[in-house]
Length: 613
Image (cartoon, rainbow, N blue to C red; front, side, top):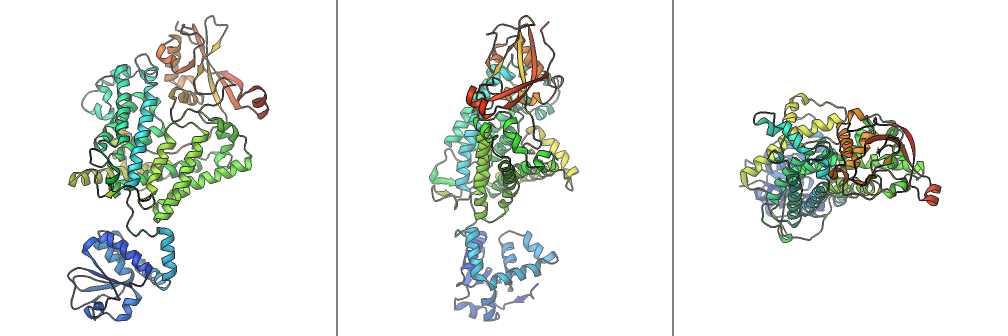
């Protein structure tokens, strides 16, 4: 550490003296000026008053390194001056490390000297990594775009669920919400409302459930329009949470969890205004932007890393994509063509997936231009996934999180940016601190646990995790950790005499061999998705599927609306059975001659023959 020096005439406020002819210095001085505001004066060493004012400092020291003179007369230079300046701006971690961690001071002083001796190169590298915008990154434009996109995602989610909710959890649905909540009412005390945080405590009628979806869609429209975002976002989150509680299996997908977590954090992005205007874009709190980027990091790295840590042989041999397009829940028409790509290309594509999911998120920690560089690969991956598979609103929501890789300088000059705030004063700051102190440790433990790592202190975090778990807003992510290598499909058949069987046809899942794979997203046919998962398990382990079969035996009208074709046209079949087939994409010849997209092989009976008798 350099020797402490002092001047005999200290300034009234700290003064940083720099080489005004150095472009590298001018960039970083301007950046630091934004951090310290008016509490520090910045003066070029070429100012003739500086040598006279601080005559104790040799002139050659001004040319060699920056000099910081504090109000007590203390003089520091080079890396020490940088760290003490950061401390004046409220950043104390690095200055503390400089003074107390062995090795930090000599290493940083050496690095400073290398940069000072190669200023032209350092200036060019700075322009390459940070661009010409010296001001610290702000995210007013990204926030405005993100809230519009989040409103669209909420609108899609409520619309899609509203079209199915009666058949899924209505009074005559597969998993009736009223029966579920009637059982929940056996719980006593106020703790039941914490365990099951849902508005459905008040009413679980079909009209009420449908009303929640309609209300959610209306609120989402207000968010898209920018009307009262600070009031709309909490209600949107609570409404979707309420439906998630009562929909159980049907609303338990990773994108449902992602929407709840994203929607919760977005509450603290919302500007406190009646109507958002482009000419008055509010700069969001920096801590919320960092929480959004932490969520993006966990989502992407978690999805990539679990593929490696799961031990799945297809990921380790790079052959996962050779089966993925065919075996995923609901492929698109493009998946049929992607499945026929050469193996070497699919293996190379798997390597690219790993590089994007695991490598690109680390650029979140890098300078602004590298962060912006990560935007296109991450969003491009979501586009490719959406082209080959129907994953509801997941790809749109994941791409929306990537917007926080782009600061206001990267997004152009549209809109007028002002220092807006989501909430005001100490209440807002207190809430943000509480959210960060709660979500960061819980999400960090969940993230490392998904990778098979137990960090120090995990036991201490576990009670907090259990406490907030019912709100489903701090989650772990890891898509396709284990690849399914074959495609079992359940085909439901009904009969009136036990001898002649007729097939039920679903709207989207594989069934009719000549039906082209559908374009379903952003709508999610949740029954079709659950059928894919049920085919991977056993009939005895799927109570919802047993209930579904009972509803078909009753010819329940609400449940039948979830299907594409009822072979009995509303009549009650006497028997129902489920048969398990193995489905594969057809080859090019069969596709060209007979218009056949699939071929199948009967495996076994999935269920016994069922009857209401």
